[in-house]
Amino acid sequence: MWVKICGITNLEDALCATEAGADALGFVFYPKSPRYITPQKAKEIAEKLPLHVKKIGLFVDVTPEEVSFTCKEAQMDMAQIQFEVDEAFFNALKVPYVRVVRTREPRDVEQYEGLIRLVDAYVEGFGGAGQRIDLSWFENSDRDNIILAGGLTPDNIEQIKPLGFYGVDVSSGVEKSKGFKDHDKVRAFIQRAKA
Image (cartoon, rainbow, N blue to C red; front, side):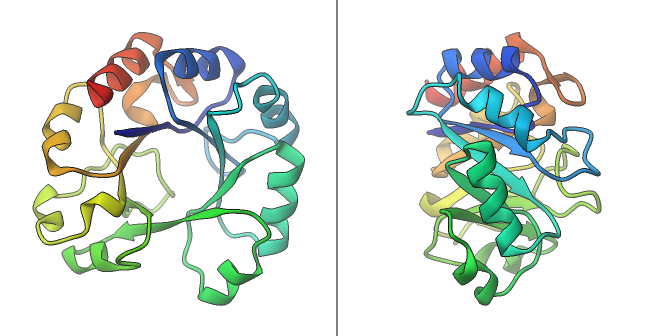
C-alpha cells in the first residue's frame, strides 16, 4: 500500500518518515494552515530526501501559475489541489498533480471515477482535522484508484487495508502537536500499512 505522510514542517520528521518507508511526503503551502511551510524551507528539506520519495505540495485558493511556480521553486514532484477547481485549472498546470475529493455524501466518492484521486472528509479548514469518512460509502467504488485520507491513525489502519485502497494519506493521526510528528506513530503507521 502506497503511504503519504502529510504536513511535514521540518527535516527530522521528513527523515523519520522516509527511513520508515513512506512513499511520499506532503508539504502544505496554505498560509492559514498550522502546518504551513514556506517554499524555501520545503526546498531545503526536499534537497535532502531520496529521489524515490515523492514530494507533494498541497495548495488551496491559488492560480495554476502559482502552483506551477511554487512546485518548481520548492522542488516538489507533484501538486495536490485541495480546493474546488474546473478542468481548465488542471489543464493549465505545468506540473503533475493529484485531484482531491472532499466528501460530504456517499456519491461524492464517485467524482473523478477511474482516475487516481485523494478522497478526504469534508472539513471547513482544508484537512488535518482527523475527520473519518464512513467506509460504507466506498462499497461500490473503484478503490484501487483511491488514496484515502481523513482520520487515519496507527490504530485503525488495519481496518482499512482489506478494502484495497491504492494508498493512504495521514497527517494529524501521527502528530504529537500540529505540525510536529510523533516518530513512533509514524513508524507504526507505515509498518502496519505496508505489512
